[in-house]
Image (tube, rainbow, N blue to C red):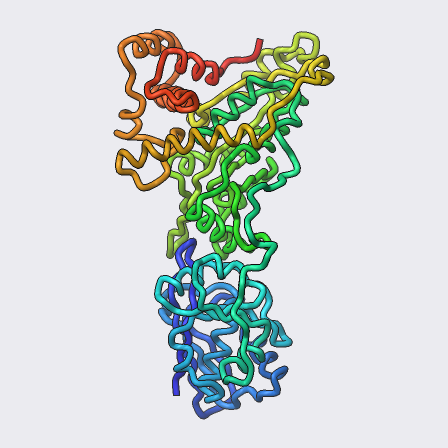
Length: 509
């Protein structure tokens, strides 16, 4: 008799249905798993044997063959343990596998038969929901599974409890979203824009960036507040939409980094160290896990001390900044992860950090500043919509008692301007939420049309500069965002003028 149990294989963000088949035939005692299993799947043999022993069930003495079809797709991960055990139970007539025909199962087995947390549960739940199937998963994954919209979930704490449930001895109660997983309207990030003294110009630039989804490069001496400002960027971003939250949650689930509440509500903030390798940024490894670029999807990727990163790491940002996705190429497959990121970067003006400050700059100026800036290629600099200098805060500003805007107030304005952009995209028949920083093609040309006066002003402003054609379009995108923040239908010269202030490429004076 051949018993069959459904499970999934994870190929990037795309779960693929896999059928686990088990057959017990006469012969010498052996246990074989076929269907391109990796080492983790191969080790399932010992975990399954131990779980059977803990249940007091003798493992079959004949030849046990487990096949995972389709056999040409690599199988990786420990979540195949549970479907393998269930398939063997079916082949032994311990359970009726016909009851599992409409079920997808995922789970790792402990040596004592318990089911610990596994990554990727929400992706499996989404596949089951799409095919109108129920899901069997570990108890610790129930919150994550429920967010997929699938209500037919059996969340078992152990193999014995699941076995008793299937055989009708006891019942596993239907899972419910726990109280601590319910979204809070006000999330305390622990930091706030009101913490920053002075820097009104930079705060304004970051508000523009948050509104239009623009990439930002901040250049300033050590201690000027670049990192402090960047860490508060996520506090002024609106919460994720339902679709964005689900997609971001899938990425964190596959990476095994999902928070306890089971859903990523707010834009993620990633801050890798400048020693990060190419694989840790792009993603990859033997199991092709998502990297920092994908973990920042729908959120902020902050690169502090940008020139100190490996050049290959910086150059790897080109594709995702333009296309919103990153592709990991392997000999037999290509895995694509979403990477719709907002890049915030910071750097010193030179190696010592004090170029432009006469009393503190080193003797190698200005050559040291030129050499340091040249570590970043022109194409990467062109990917930044906003490039600003962050001046040091004056001592007098530290002791001023003037009222400061908090993040909630700024976020309210950002949400209003983003709603305007979404409504405009809908009028053009676009289903996605097109922020100005990501628009291109005919839609960009349409929303950045200039009248004769504004066209003449813009042409005169850039004709004698070294600004590239890509940079010109980025200035127009920023100007469109500024106009949206003022709820104005068309771009005016003063919108262009402000956008040009956010495009400084020279050294501070």
